[in-house]
Length: 154
Image (tube, rainbow, N blue to C red):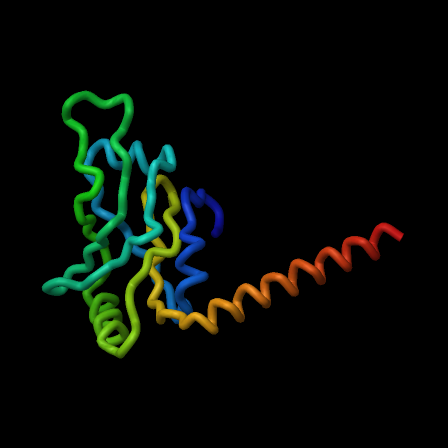
């Protein structure tokens, strides 16, 4: 994250359930009140994924709550959202996704110079033993940091 960026939400579940092979920044086509809801961090994308249909990338299960201060002209919170990518980027993603076990998962939503951007990851699913290994590594890191912190006091 560089200058002029503000992280809105991060998909922590994605990093636990998938190996992230590659990530790509893409824009998202939003309707009127969706932008204000996203800027208020009213998004939920724990189970969301992207799919490529007829040369376009669409995100499914990406929930943007209705904007509280709007009138009757509010948006549909669960509609599929179109992701904005260049044609060559989409072709590269198609080649990756056609391989067995790869899928497109949104990793984080952020503002970049006032525009809503999504970091889309090319991910491969983890097996149960991989998840156990991740938990074990996280616990050992936590114990090491505690030990290091306690030794710093003396």
